[in-house]
Image (tube, rainbow, N blue to C red; front, side, top):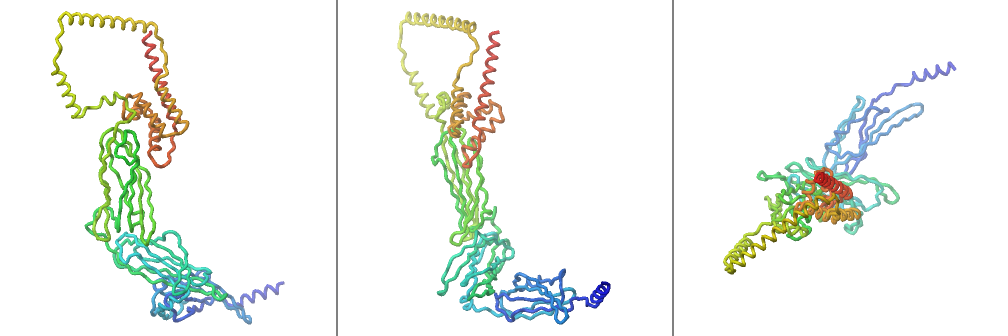
Length: 548
């Protein structure tokens, strides 16, 4: 046993201590074609775990693909050798003479490699089994104007796997729109599977730029064999124009901007308390949905406005980016009268004629009439128009000009005495009835019209009919407050109940907003009943004080 340990120690001591003594770099083909992937291998004569070559220097001239690492140990006739190899896929976009620089690992450096890249024939590329086409919707854009970049990958063989990189452009935002699509096309009598991707290009600075085309590397099946393939699209040059110095306001470059509106109901005459839904639609070409400005409507005295959430979307149609914003507002007239909604205008820069334009909605006049449920007293209390006043004055003048018939004096005296006696009798009767009522009357609670209205509110609350409940609440408020307009607001002031005001606000939001809003109708009825009980108790207390 001791002898075995001694032998092992001698063998270990006799084994050499390995270290990296040589680092070699090589390529699998030279020259290569532009747009064609080739393999760069960097090998060290030892097992390397904590060190690796710095390949970032290759990014300047090459498209760098995936990197794989392998280690190997060989024992031949008792001689042991170790090797670590880094394999890197590279590709050049243009033809020319290149130099793969030297690399260093564990203090040992490799020699640089001179690489020759030949131009790929355009005709030969079209006849290949795989190629890429790239195009841009316009060769010039303004800063922050959106352009559409389209990439098409053509495959004539069965694809096993592959990777299509994204395009790149300095000082710009590139984002893919939607998902890729697949269809088939015939090119020079050859059938290809075409994979299409669309990207949104938004430059952030002015100047001359180049969009670097995407690259593809993958494997196809050909005659029961698997082949590595690659493809490179053509770069696209683009000119980015600056924002004009004389432009004021939010920058909105576009070929066309349109502002439209819809009204529900469409009539220009509505009653007090009738909700109006106004929907504004802003549509623009060549910009993203994030660039659409918010449209703010001014407040109008006498009309409450309840804005809904805005919705922004964009899509691609016929090679153009179309963005759209939809904003809805619920308008609730509070008082009768004639109201003029001012013009709405959105400035934008017309990239076709290179000048400022405006998308506008003309001013609109609406007439608000009193509610059809208004009491006659409220209608009579309205002031007379000048024409009505003039007619009344004319009638008065005509009446005064009418000659008064002459009656005998004795007949007049008898008539006056008769009227005096009748008036005295009426006063005595009224006093006797008042005294009898004070002696016999007891405090009782009658089933008033308000309780009838509350029964109607309960019925609509059980059926959860928001519109009918609001109309019944308006009639109930008009009965209690004796007002023809703004009765519900007056009812809130009389109740002086914050919870009731919150529930009524939710009721209006549920009635006038296109979105679903939860409202507790039964809670509103309960608060109104509680308010009625408090009023009855106060009335009973007053009556008891009279009979003490």
